[in-house]
Image (cartoon, rainbow, N blue to C red; front, side, top):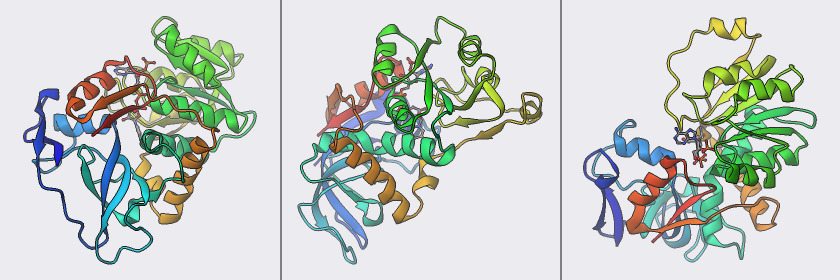
Length: 322
Ligand code: NDP
């Protein structure tokens, strides 16, 4: 089968298209024929060596597809089932293994590309808005990078529970997308000071929660956008990692809360995984959640996709199709 492999860490050029044997599912594992592969920032961190993994490595953790074979002790999945997962053991490939415990079924008739586009960013948006800081009607949230893959879904989910969304984006075209996703206010944070604007838009009160995936360039000002006892949810670092931070700032700025969550602790049990995945996949299948999937590349162009997601030029989800 064709797969992308990394033999050494480095730039996009280390992503190499290779022929490797189709893997054989061991106990508790399922082999899927991959239909679509979700591209995520974390693959760049592994490629660059910021996150460590044994080499050679087939990158990628998100994919949808059909069940090709099941290993021993697997229950609940059969050959031909439509499935998706964010825990694929190397999804940049034509076939891949997934622990059955981490696999979910895709609703009948749903486009498998949409399933791959929705799952990781959708479950992330779901835990951020329903568990980390459970939004309710009347709350105001500041959502950075609101036209990104996660940002568009988070904005839609925040609006669906009745919260007010102040969104930040870098261009007018992205502002249009954030508004279409339901954002009440949009700040072009490359032109305007988002701290000043957020204070103005909240009559000086500040927001209840900031969802910040941008990190290095937004973190300090984001703290200044919070109301007393508000919550800073730092869930990514698209602009770089936030440097070490003096906790006394949380006191000075108003008894604030800060958390740095990751999806994996929010899908720790089978019940939680099924609840979040069901919310997202059924929401997309029923038309309650809209996705943008205009950035789709052949598997061989994985390097281009990784350059593009980091370039700030994309909106919505990036997919590879084998
Ligand atoms: P996005 O589609 O949001 O792409 C990143 C966006 O960040 C860009 O489009 C850009 O939007 C904004 N950005 C601001 N500054 C920069 C910069 N210097 N370089 C690049 N982008 C910049 O990506 P995802 O939705 O896939 O992921 C968003 C973030 O969330 C990532 O950091 C990812 O690692 C993290 N994440 C965390 C998870 C968790 O559980 N903790 C799970 C999933 C993702 P604009 O042009 O509008 O500024």
